[in-house]
Image (cartoon, rainbow, N blue to C red; front, top):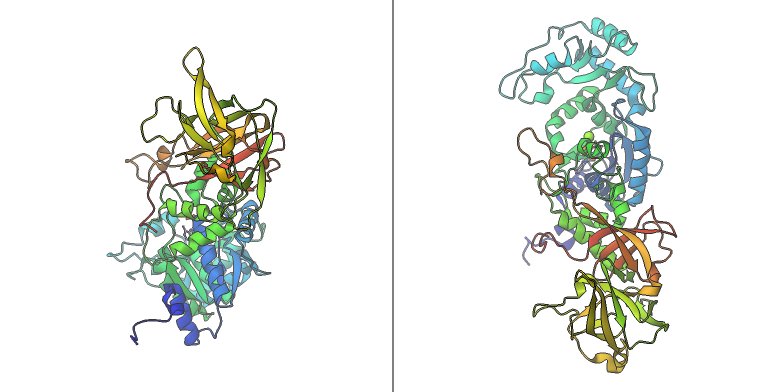
Length: 563
Ligand code: ATP
Ligand code: MG
């Protein structure tokens, strides 16, 4: 046997799982894994966060561990409980459970303060009176050492006194900061006396007015992981260069040595992912709120008709990478199609209708035809589809002067109406301007679908609805929000909003078969031959509203070969 061939279970490990299994084997943290998802409550979660959620909760599930939900709420200016609530809802909706382990960085403010005092006592932190700009200017460059602060050699006593005064509100914002005393010549810029605490006289959404100094992200994040005894602290690549600093804190504070592992953040084509940009789209009215179905926020995707299973499948399919990359958004669309194909009930709906009358069908008669609710399900039940003399078909399914390869309806030609009969076009009626207003056909009663003699072949099958039974619905036809694969690709002095697709939303009226009556919010359907649609929260019994989740086929790119 070739010893190079690994057992199946080992083959599929990603690099993070390899690290975790190594650590378990070496007893680094015992046989135990504990992860966390650490959002900053300063915006709604997006598909990139979903990737991180699936990764953190997925790892713990796979290895029988636990995952905490921890809000990294160290910046009172941008944070809000509205975001906290939405984040919890979204994580739960994705199918993950943090039990009673809901934590906040702000819960640890006392401990973090004590850690800062400990560093001061060890001579490893000092109060600096330089402004934030001066500090930045004195940091040097990766090839040129920084300039030491004139306040760097304050005594421990003086630092303790000043830090306490900072805490007690004696100073204004920007007057003083607390910095670590590490090495202004370090080749790693993050080790050049980074800021640990800054003064912000703003109430915090949880601690109120208790604090007017707040820890920096770098001083809070790793310490919170240690306090929660997180074994594997998974974060995105830009934090790789922060790792030596986090390890310095662990060593000097003698705290739990969480292991940080970095992976490449998710980037998607035709999308912006940073919360700052998503906030601009909302604030500047390019979309109608965080849950606009064109937004790749989790609440936007949900309203669009994406299912938790499809998002989890997406996260699984793209895997974890060590290098930055860009995933084709077609992969996400593929995942939702694959899911809804198995689960969404079928219905017929006509989006751009033209009247069609069967002259040899009795006036006033209604026949109930049968269609499978979902042909992908071998035990599928059937739905009733009413049929009558007066129908609507899709205007595009008729051509008066068709090219040879057109296999739908045209004068003198036959086509099958799905679940019904073969019909033949015998006439067209036009208005004064030559616009077709009605198509006149005959139907062949011998060709009813399902009958043994119905096997007469015609090349095309089209969908339809019965005029007297049709339900009107508003349909919102979404397209990609950006025209460019990389929306940030703009000329000097311009910004990503200039790449917004002006036609990303078209509203139309659809005529639907009656089985969609009573559709509930978030209920999905496949409108046959058209796409997947999801009932919107704006829908009422009087006015149905559907969002187009995705078309049936990828109309933008070929994804085969990219998967
Ligand atoms: P943004 O750049 O959108 O503001 P962020 O990193 O500031 O994102 P956080 O709330 O701090 O947002 O993120 C919470 C967690 O989600 C972090 O662990 C972060 O690494 C992860 N995360 C954020 N964006 C992505 C992404 N695009 N791909 C993968 N993980 C991400
Ligand atoms: Mg962040």
